Length: 203
Length: 203
Image 1 (cartoon, rainbow over the protein chains, first blue to last red):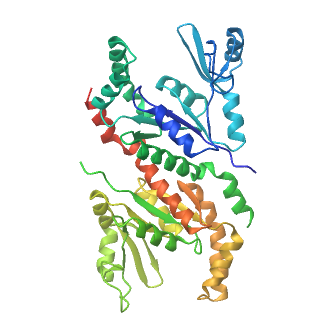
Image 2 (cartoon, chains in turn brown, yellow):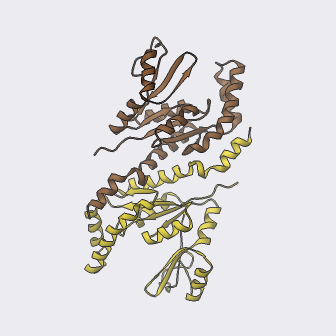
């Protein structure tokens, strides 16, 4: 029997460095995959369906919501975004680990629907550093920066619903910790029923 | 505040390779320590008090039992053996990880008294291999081999009370998994209250 993959949920406030961590982790684990989101927003020139997003018409997306085909979804302004359950489950069944980079609200919804996932909260070394990172992006208006920063503070409280917290001070170390978490989770007794049954079956 | 160490309990049937794993893990982690047992049996020529064992007179050992000074203890023929709680707690308070190699009965007792420990069950790749390893030791009488093998089979059932199961096929890989487990456990949300409070305190 093929060993199932693991759903690794990488979450945390904006500016914590989720994206960089996922990218580096994927680079080191070429057999794993990034979860591909579905969206109703139109593709940008370089984007490919099934790679960057699954592009869906609005009625199709709404049908998928009704049929419970999302691990989570949200409407942002006029567009829907969601994590299709089927894609994730298919990859896991084929033995591939799936990494999902997602904001805190999304992660908490995923946890309700798929609690076998591993939920990792990425934090900056301190809140000053988080502020610096948000400001440094330079793409946002000052009021957006302030809003992001305020919600980052509020969101820290959700940390207790996660399994792990990883401080992203040095990217190398953070990725190394994620690797350790994934390997350790695969050794958890409750994830190894087939192995235990096999040993018992040899009695 | 100094970060506390972790109690790592390495357990499993005879012949699983607990001792080799602990030795190699300790070699790689010179800041960690092996838990030192107390015993009433007399020291052998090369043994040193406080290094190989804490050697105790019988009345002293029994006083320690009464005063709940053991994480676990057992009487084997005429001699007591036990894991002194104080030594372990002192090392943990000083930030050192403590590794405890112990049989299954002992580990389950430790779990009752110290459930913050990380309980790892070491298994052979298969039961045939376990038999081969027990026989290969060559030090035991055939009836002892048979007894060990029978109890190894029975003991596999206790695996579900542990947190992790590690297959000891290649020693390098088994030790690498233990390292991952230790690092992952240190990232668990419930072991990081001070960090979370610190982040919240910066609001």
